[in-house]
Length: 377
Image (cartoon, rainbow, N blue to C red; front, side, top):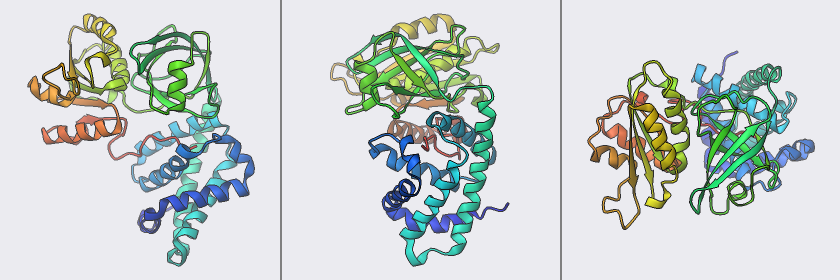
């Protein structure tokens, strides 16, 4: 099977400027031709509408990233099982996607584009179907989690501990998608803030987003004893990506969660790395996890913690986490892990490149050259 990436990119350039029209036509056709698929989606489609098309196209446009893309597709397929996705759903999505692009591009669309996209999509579907079938042999499509602790740390941040009903096989640094009973079929990703433990407990740091359905439900309408649904683990921000003995962790807000899990894991590594953790918050009161961080510091012995406050009039320095890195004259001579908002990650990565950190030593939830970690359905 030969996939013509050149044809795919040329055809995508025709419709990318009007991607919103492609999205509208895609969903209209999908739900009209396959009405039973509509029940897999949340009642309100505002957020979901753009995610599906973006994820589909980005996966196809990154097909050269062989091993990285295959791993990503495997995670995506396992995650799809929680929606009830079956093998027969893939052809429906693929045909509607190509039909939507063809309709939007009009006479500029060539028959060869159809063939190139369907060849690529069929390859993707085959990889994902096989991964889902293999996963179904030994793991459930989703886990039922019981909330065992709910701590409000700041007016905007809660720390929630959940006990899954079955063993949850994840790696430190990965994340899970959560669904609250208040919003059926609406899933949101949250990093797991602890390394795997014998008691199978998972801790999540939840920041309430203004107008956020799931974050508001988790912050204000969730109590110990409540149930949540957990999707399978996803993500690639794992310790194995590091190749040096000096690690720098840069976290913005609740982006601390996966880095904290990596610190916990590193305590038990035979050649324990030296770690400099820079935790950036807007105000001093937003530093919500100081007690746990000090506990980790006493266990690790090669861990240094620096807090950076960016927007507090009472703190005269007022700098970001990456500013603090320079202020303390820490030489970024090893691997750097960055986690926070997409804007924070982008700005920080650019600053690190400017400081001379090689691209392949800057680790975020986006593997270098890989497809973005987005939920397709």
